[in-house]
Image (cartoon, rainbow, N blue to C red; front, top):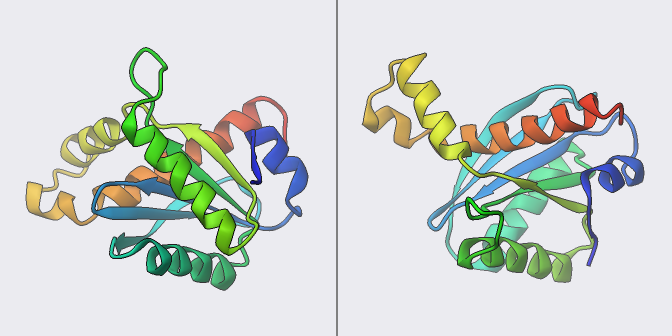
Length: 158
């Protein structure tokens, strides 16, 4: 399985290729994409979960359409840094995805990402609960991916 650190992901993927970010929820998968320079992450799509194979194939099609060379998956750690059932589910998704296609994957700590996105959508954009429901997961995916990109940039990694 090609799960690596963010630094290893940056070193092993071709320059000038975007990455996708995933926020794996219980019912949906929020998807975000970076630009080719990996400076900016933008919300892309919300995938309603059905069966794993269909969900994974959809993610792989999005990667192909964007010519994305890697995935950053949000890892929902507990506040003490330990892994619970949701984190194990994210790791299982990555493992099972690798069975369909060898894809470079890195995990990014996503603690409080949904909370931060909800706060932003309420405070800055004044979105109603109904309108937030449609954008929170894909915006959380962008938040996760942007956090990974910023972390690499701050470390001087391209």
